[in-house]
Length: 367
Image 1 (cartoon, rainbow, N blue to C red):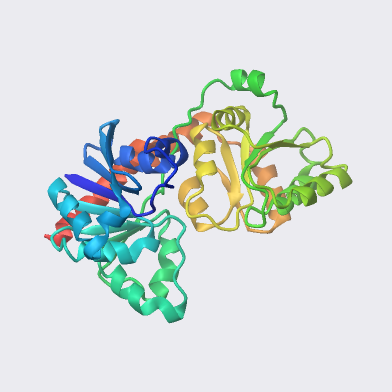
Image 2 (cartoon, rainbow, N blue to C red):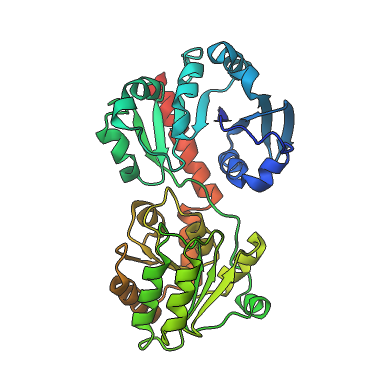
């Protein structure tokens, strides 16, 4: 089987093609997970300049976006025809119009659209989107319930298959915990890690309140926070400084290099998240790849990933977080068990097998 994965989001014009692998790692990660299942994969990436790169058994074709979509997408369709792709895999539900234009010229090939945190269009704009989505034989979300807003808006036809496949995976490994302690200087019993922005969507203030409420029951607990953008940083600092249950217990690390995030997670006992919505949860995947037991909000993506090796708590419920932390601290799954769950369900090999099965179903249905 030969699958063409198409990314209609063009590379910024000042990027060299090779920069995509560093700055948009999920493009290669998803392609390589599929290739690991024995499927031939070609990635067609919109860019400012044409180029071909072969890497890890995957061929990447960078094509001029304006030229590829000229004449209602005929040049891109011709390229895909020449590749001999059996299935078309489009990244992002927001590119349905372009996908529909190309699919019109390739009626013999099923197309699958993969969600990357898309939202349904407003109700007054939905008529054309229904027509565009009709080109898709299947759609993929991390959890089936994430498709519900699109289904309820009748954007997908009754014959459109909905697949539950993790959005990506992680290359992190468990490594040496003692080595991670020595490298990072982390400590705590339990040692809890946070990796995420300090914004309303990640809800750090509720997490801090939950930590405060459980501090007397878990006096050795320390929380270590790595974060990128931080619009709530001032509020977070004030909350920590004014509460003796948090001062000296919560450590704000700021932005860390990706390799340092892996060391942080290897050193941790628990991973905590207050996210109110996620299309997947990349930091959660990374934590579980390191064998860290998750204590995360009860949202669809988290439910799909955590399985029975972590605890879920209601969004915005500080007491729910405190109870979950206390429960998992006293009955914590081993790092070996968490990593075994990751290997079986969330690793690149596991995700690749799920993609292979989805492609096969679409091909069988199309025939």
